[in-house]
Image (cartoon, rainbow, N blue to C red; front, side, top):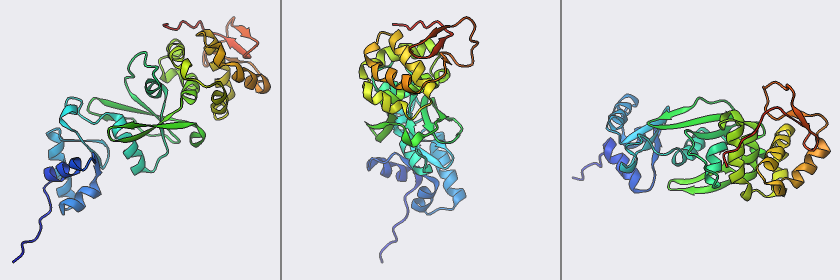
Length: 267
């Protein structure tokens, strides 16, 4: 008699996935492969999680944690965020300090992996890995590119879109001085014409602030087309640092900007 082929146990299932280069799965995948009830499947994967073999960045979604990342307690965010976003059906891109790091402007390592979505989502805590989500209007219009990671391709904002987001979300990027510092490192990657294209996807005040900051960090050559763009569209002056008092701010006529903060990049 031929013996029936028995489903693998949870550990063997995870080992088989890793052997094929797949480092994530969901509850339904595991239940089908293991041939167990939902409750029994949960118990089986929880046992693996207790031993550090897997981790769960989101409900019902699991990542396999190879030995080199056991101390981290999870896969690095760039290695599971694309798969998680695909599973959830959410358009996304990695941005701000996370994207700046990929573009060579890593003044200091970000404490969290920063992701833009078109809707609100709670942050992720997986072992020592932290993922923060921000909402971006016109998300699908923002210029993005892909970079390869050990577990697949990651979508992130282009240098130009990253520069604009840094200015628009300066409170998520360490404040105005930190933004200026990152821009000084990012400037060499910026294409002036692409900067205008990216500006079309963002509020006009972001372009006004970005142009001023680029000049402040010595990257005037990158700001020419952006200045023309602002000059043709900006009919009112805005504050360099939003949500701060105007006070005795000096008005920069070129960028139609009230300079209500002193910028000191750490160059």
